[in-house]
Image (cartoon, rainbow, N blue to C red; front, side):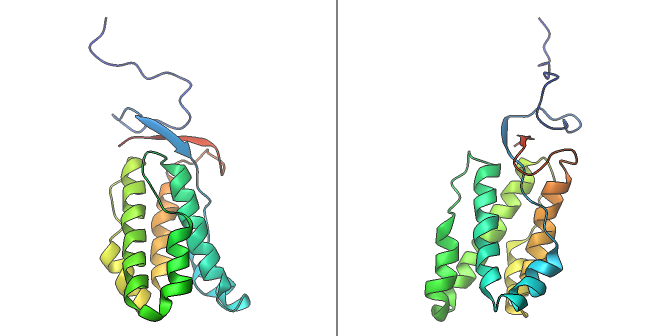
Length: 155
């Protein structure tokens, strides 16, 4: 018996160099950051921002089912508690932490900074671009996987 664990050949995604998959999840959708930030929200009078926020949380929950990711809660915070100012800021910071955890689970360096995302949200909502670019790094790391395909998680 070998001291090294053999990786099965039918793993759902490309194996990262020197890393052994520990779980699996579902591939997320790659989105255009500029469209998510300004294009679609302009067309829909801001409603798409809520849809985008809900969708990324839904996909993060399916990507790594080992973590508890609230799906509707963060979007409802923006919708119902936006007037408090503090609640949305806490929600945006939490979204950055969840994206950072997804990057780690994908075997990538955690390049998403919740603080930077939060500051950019205060500057014309540009945090949407930042967060979507960071999410796209995760989706791009699974080149051959289509949306909803099983992908390997490493951490």
